Image (cartoon, rainbow, N blue to C red):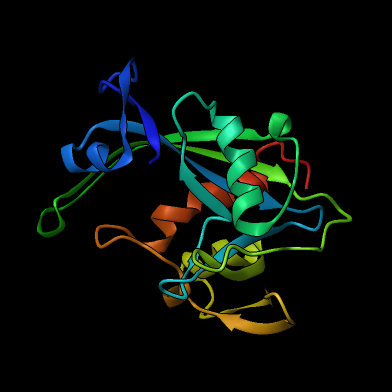
Length: 201
């Protein structure tokens, strides 16, 4: 069973608990959201296996005893098959995330650490974790932001799966968001960061 470090609301570590207990009791913990981009100004969204929607390149809990960079490196390898050194991953922001599903006795209180790293130019050999991810969608970051800001009805993107690569049109409805979110609120800052903030694209 996975154990997570737990924290008070000021991000002071106060112990460890099993993951199920953390979510039953709404205890604060850390997650990592891993974003990959490339030299051509593209960002990579994963295709979620459970919904078919677009989400962060990889993401997950920071396990007990891990650093955020350790978790970034592990999640990228587990979900898309990329072995990499995450020491150059760029921290973008920390989101204080709260979500409750009382019917399922599930309460999420997470410090979501948002990090970005450049995809190695030569890397094309993705291996997807089938229970989590069915593939990736590569989208120009500027065009994606225009889409989410309603400047375009759709954008052209490239879908990468285990057996093929195809071009397709993406709309705002293709992005995974929580009931209290919009795509531009959830993904806009990351897109702006990759376009504007010293990520050398």
